[in-house]
Image (cartoon, rainbow, N blue to C red; front, top):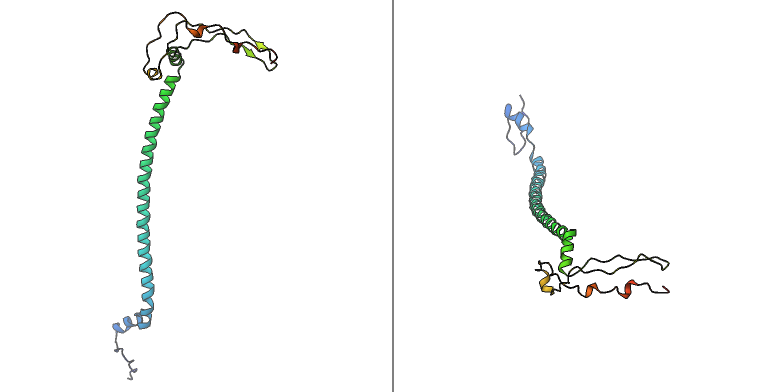
Length: 169
């Protein structure tokens, strides 16, 4: 039997070892695979780091969202409380009580002026049922007592010249 000459640097293998040796790449193929493996490892590492950064950003955004929702709820509660206060101060009975505290009296019958200058209606003066109560600005916030009864004050005087029509207009 003649044997094939043995290549240099490689021992001769027989049997099963020879078949397995054929499956292994030569030195050149091993060297060409190294950059590919490094590229895959770098891509996987970069992907994992990217996922970590993305997850951290999403968690921070969730915390900010929670804080903003809590702040929105607090501000909504405050807005509703302020709206209740406005509604209480705007009620007709509250406005009437406040006007009486300031010394205001109900107005008389109004007169209306048409576009052509004619006066419609008969104006009448306001009549004071009670004397006006004059309060200092500091006392306005704490005034709760109704004004005392007595003689009518200057607000019950005759109608002013502003309510009489001016000729020629």
